[in-house]
Image (cartoon, rainbow, N blue to C red):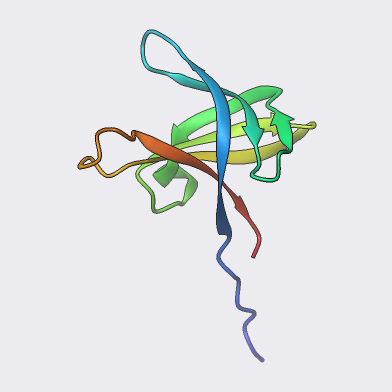
Length: 95
């Protein structure tokens, strides 16, 4: 019997509307897709290092609520050699 092969989710990089407080905490409020669609983030349910979410990236994972459903939004920290760009945001979609 063949074992089903699970495809790795694809990272889709997105624009994020956010605020940053005096401690440096980033609070995303909306996700903007490249096709122009914008989805408001109704709530941030959880925040943790991305590695704790089973991901191999250096950054953070936000569990956010969009249209009543939990979604994962990742902040991928940039290479420290590129100080002008702190990082970028992505969501995972099934390939």
